Figure 1 (tube, rainbow, N blue to C red):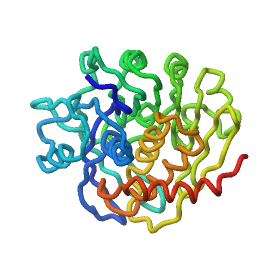
Figure 2: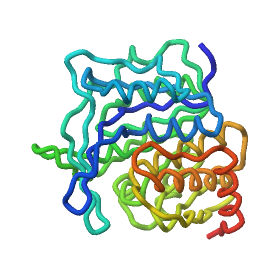
Figure 3: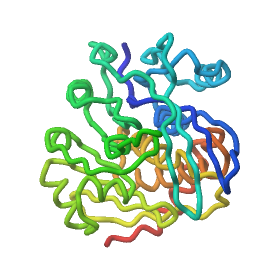
Figure 4: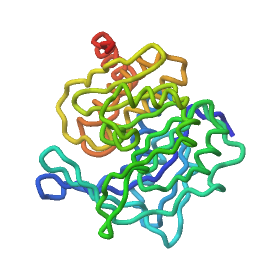
Length: 302
């Protein structure tokens, strides 16, 4: 088994996106889609550990097979559904409803000979347990956690509500933490950014990234906290932008690049994703790096 630059762990999703009360169309989603493809476009060797049901569309499988990802860790479970979300956008807010959930990632889904420079743990419906996270840490140089699925609770109708989540045993083995601001609040329990970031660093998290949508992102390293701009572009659809950001970030980080530069690459990669619907636009490496350089020239230490 090769040493992968990046392994993305979590569920693929079948997304139905609704805007202004009308379904737009279905799309392939989930971190193994957006994070993996953004990293692959930058030249990273990427694998996934995920599960889907036998309802997974053949056209999506063909798309993934042509993408250059290593899909040896993708398991199709007969008789089970693929994780399925309805995402409704209204007045700048997003409402999520879980319609179906694939089986969780199990210990035997992690290959015993897995070797990775970075592992991105990014559950979307609580499908990755602490045991799995600890096991993945042993197989990687860097463990990156996106807690988006850990801060979600589900009402009987599947509607998503955010809940508090804080697990020192997981955070203490996390090298890179990335979350949206709302998710960050539910992990840390405070809106005060410096206080929360300091708390994560004290636990041993080396890099903290907080994404802020159109306001860009913040990255905290040993060198301080830096504001990373968002690249101004024509926004068609924002789903997957955060996943693309961290996938691109990690693709550059495992090359030994400066974290602030990597964050600019992440922001640039996200700017391509939002220019089209679904996982259809990621930008070529030279295009992403050109936008990243523009952003890097505007970075501010805060």
